[in-house]
Length: 238
Image (cartoon, rainbow, N blue to C red; front, side):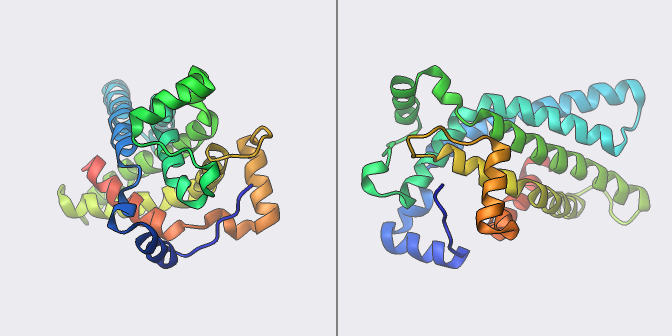
C-alpha cells in the first residue's frame, strides 16, 4: 500500500513546480460529473425524505435527521461512484511512476477505458468504501447542519439568513470531517491500488494504515479536507 507523506504547503508547492497552474485542476471533468450525479442525488433524496417525514410526524429529532442523511449518502454514492473513481485515479496519477499511470485525458476517456479493461463492474470498484464514506459524511453533515440550524433559531441567537447558514455549515463540516477522513483515506488507497493482489476491504485498509503508519495518520490531510468540506456544505445547503 503506497504511503504518501506531505503537508498541504508541500503539496501546493510541488504541484505548481511540476505541473504549473494546470496541475491544480487535474480531474476537473470527473469532479463536475460527480457533482451532477452524487450531489444532486443525495440532496434530492435528503430534502424529499425530510419534507415527507416532517409532514407526518412534525419536527424531526437529531437521530432521524442523521439516519435520513446516511441513507441519502448511500444513494448518492451508488450513482456517483464511477465519476469518483476516475477523479481519484486522475489525481493519484501524479504520485505514481510513469509506467503505472492510467493517463485518463478526461472523464469520458476514463469511463471508456475502465469499461474495456475492467468490465462494467469495474466502474463501481471501491463502491462499498465509497458508500460507507458517503453514509458517514452525509449523516454527519446533513443531519448536523439541520439540527444546529434549528437549535440556533430556537435560541434566538440567529435569524434565517447567510450568517446562520455559514455557522451551521462550519460546525457540520467539522463534525463530518472528523468522522469521515479515516474512511476517505482508506477509500483512496483502495481505488488507487496498483499491486497485482486484490485490494483490501475498507476495514482491513483502515486497520493496516493505523497499524503501520500510526492512528493519527488516519486524519492526514484533515486541514485541506475541512477547508473544502465546510464551504461546500454552505454552498450546497444554503
